[in-house]
Amino acid sequence: MAGLDFYNNDDNSVIDKAGMALSHSPKGLLLPGVDQTTHHEAVRLCARDYLENHTFFNDQQYHNHLNHHLLAVFSMGASAKRLQEVFDINNNYQRPSLALASDVTITTDNYTEYLSKEEYYPNYIAFYRHELAESNGDWNSVVSKYFFDPQVFPLAMSGLLHPFIQLGYGLEFKSEAIIACALAQASVHKKQFSYALDSETFDEICCGDESNAVGLSLLDILSRMRNDSVTAAIAYNDDPYTEDNRSHAQALAVKYAKLWTVASSESAVKEKSMEAVSVIALVYGSLTRPGYHPTLEFGIMHNLTSSYFLPIFLEALPLDNQVRLLHAYIVTFLYMFAAKGCPPLYIQPELTSTNTHCVEASESLSGNPWMDIFTKAIANNDMHVSKVVRALWRLSLLTAFPDQAKSVKGYELPPAVNCLHLARITVDSINQSTRRDSVTDKMQLEIPEDDGRGWAHGVLAFDEFWTKQGKLL
Image (cartoon, rainbow, N blue to C red; front, side):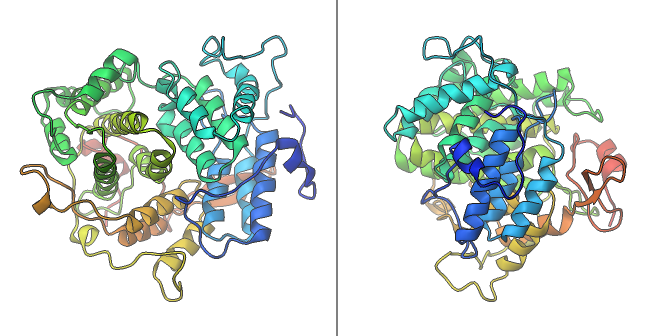
């Protein structure tokens, strides 16, 4: 790492200094607007982020999203100019990269000794880059070994799934540097779940309910969670993540994750992953009470954006880790749903109407309604909107799961989600712009009073949330 060095926009040497390269996984999505010029610019700007910035932009472990935003709009055909703008918007508030701790060398023998210690982030990058370089190109084995290490895994699935998302980008763009950063971020992360993903509890979750091999559907689980006595103990607070609420949400997530089973077969993994992604998208689009403007919740949004990477992970992992990943993924989703008070779903007819449009990279894009959404997502300065659109874009392309008639009796599968409709709601509802602060000369995000809204944060199941934060039609 380069410590406090900074580079200008004409310096292409950063690419070699960072060892930055971007290729592309067959499971990744690209639009035809991507060309050699934008590819080079994406590589250069990712290299600058790697060299200049820390993985957290403050001391509370809020995550650096720079390459997330950059690569999302790059994949949708953003111009080189727009890529630089996205870099500038995200770069102005980052913390500078740390210097390598010279008194510590992380090795295969001691790599668990420095977990959750942020000051060793550069040392972990050096360690994981060495491991990746020594793998003879078998980066997937390195990911399986370290991401699923029993002590690392609970950290890797923490923080609104950001280490998972970062690693997803590394796998999607076949970037050794980004994979190393993701594993390093996971290694220094704080633990979000006090016990849910620890070996003993998580093994119980993966074993499931032996009395019901089929398990319950996610829609059934959400309904049961809503009526659970523990849910009644979740209290309204402007900060939804009080200690008591976190404790109740984790207990609910563990209890009900055990009731969702995943058989150890490729077909079961595919069907269960489709069920998971579809239910998450359905919940994301169904939390708005009737009579209010669209309300899109911040935590559930992260479950949705991260779902884009599930097919990429599943392709890279052996079957046993595919199954474990899906179980952990559902734990994080059920926890987030519980933390919001297990709110009711208001499924509008438009959300489940026939989704007749999708975008295949090989087809003519002229006149396709997704193109307007991609254009708006690229132009949107919020760091998450383009990722939501990518996740919904992928869901619109995936082969639908078996229909109700072919599934086990009593197992309620979700309706197909109109991804185009939900993507349009997102780009039209979340409308953050930027302004330059006259004092600091830095770009600041702002939400226009009359032309858009930000993400919702709160316990949506309570009337108080809608009174304080809801916007009436």
